[in-house]
Amino acid sequence: MNKQVELKNKRIIASKHVKLGQKNRMDQTYTDINDIFFKAEQTPNFLTGSEVIREAIKRCSVGTSVAYPITPQSEAAALIGEIYAEGYLDEYFRGESEFAVMGQCAGAAFGGHRVFTTTAGPGTLRAMENFPMWAGARLPIQVCVTCRGVNSPLSIQPDTLEMYYLLETGMLVWHAETAQDLFDFIMKGFIVAEQPDVHVPIAVCCDGFFVTHTKDTVDLPPLDLTLTPYDPYQNPQPVMDMETSPIRMMRDPFVMKSNYISYATHASWQQEIKAAVERSRKHTIPLLDGLIDEYNADRELLIVASGTAVSQSREAIRLLEEEGIKVGLVKIKTIRPFPTEEIRRVTKHAKHIFVPEFNVVGWLAREIKAIIPDNERVYVGPHVCGGMTMPSEVIVEQIKIQLGMETTPLRM
Amino acid sequence: MSQYQVLPGPEAFLPPAAASMGNVLPDPGEAHIEGRIVPEDEAYEVFARKVLGAKVPTIFPGPLVLWKWNDHVAEKAKAIRELANEAPMRIIPMADYRPKYPKIEAAVEINPNHPNLTIWHNKIDVCIFIGVHCHQANLSLKIIRGGTNCYTMAMCAMAGHEDACLSFRDADLGKIRKLIDAVKKLKSEGVESQAIPFKQFKLSRAGLVDQSAN
Image 1 (cartoon, each protein chain N blue to C red):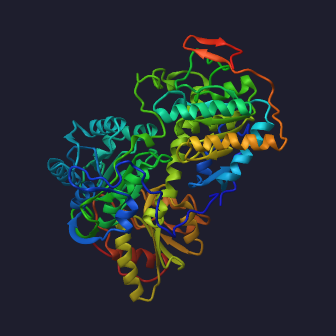
Image 2 (cartoon, rainbow over the protein chains, first blue to last red):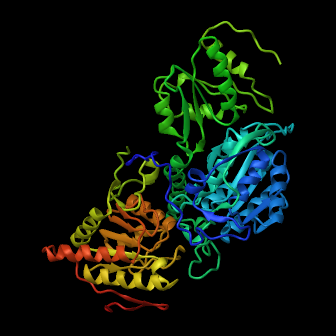
Image 3 (spheres, rainbow over the protein chains, first blue to last red):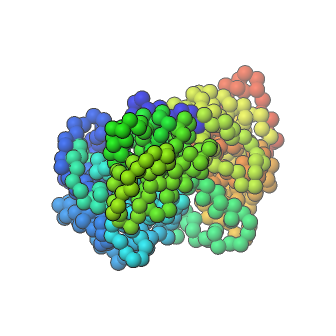
């Protein structure tokens, strides 16, 4: 970076929306994100992850939400329908399929609405073509991905493989560990994604069931505060309408013309989307208090994880501590942008790096291996998939095996 | 800290986006010069020196200042014209973002899909984008840096452009007027424009109508 991004004030540039301070039809006051999270009193509530999604959307001034049922996000989608009936959203309807839903979300976003939807597993993959389309069109739509298995034979249980498919779509990809993360990420995600220098879609991911269907204590800001609405005039490009004069920019679709310069344009366009994702660091770091959290990260044994694998790792670290084995922990909050410099820094002195994951390929370990020196230090796993749980004892066992210590094999 | 400098090209067949090289945009009150974050006031003088030292300094006004979306736009447009007269600088519009087929009129227009053609045709060595949507400005700036030796600048109404060699942010009428003031100040100190003599052309919907209008 040519400039260090400061954490000290934990604020991003405040909203200048004309409606700041005004009330909406639900008697909520349009409020700057900094004031909602860093000034307003937060009250503890005992909620499921699905209910947390509902509570976040109540406070996000969402214009349109499009729903389609697929476990484990169906409950959240239904709850959003309920708050639509109460008047919190302008538009809510069921699409014909996930592919249709994401297209309908694009239409609403092109029209200037703040747009939110949810999907999971096979739904994410069915909708896949739309995600790079959203990014290329600079649409700051938010999709909450409640991760589950994607392959046949079908599993509705948690599995983060679908996140791997999202990594190069040009979207921001954040991974919530807890229901609190999920609430914070949804609200903060809109603000980061809608910055004019970012303005790309965001996937706020969580592990299905573990987060969506378990209850947790979540601190919520008052319900009479809501985000300032999306401002379409902050869009870094004009609305892509085929015939809106004078910006009929797509009437001659440049990607279809076979000459060199059109491809150069497309290349520059793709670079610009990646650049937009990079620019989000500056806005994300103060809002999320950094792209990673670190706990005793100066230790020689380090676990690096995201999502609920972090929670399992916390307990594993406690168990290891009882045996005198000290292990540090790094929690990755944003997968895109990937916290490259942060990971290089915290792993500098680590001799063994363990990356527990809920997917068959170990994509997070690959990401880490790709960016650090001496990457034979990275142990790809333990990882489980298909909806298996990952008992903390499995992490303990794998670390001990790697260290050449005696273990008692775990049986299912 | 990124060591990547945003310098005039030709840099590469496909130069990287400066943001992907770690360059961060300026905060309010700041600008950047070749990737280095500076107080905004420092950048006005550099702008003026670049413009007065160039042979073909050119303003590329975009749709946000060419079309009268609101009254502020008309004020900005007048100030841009004043800047062009003061320096002097050529005005070549980026009226919209459609690719031009079968061929762009490189003498009188620029397009984000092949901006290098206009730079090459007119031998533009210094330019400033004003009123171009950020996405299209960034497309253009990378292509220009890739294939030409033009020093690029941007007066951006939002967060600025890492891919320009120099960029302001939060552009408004006052900041455009500061550009004029910076040029006037240097001229009053004896710095003379090196621009090759020219006259602004005039366009209508039918195309070029007057090569010598001013």
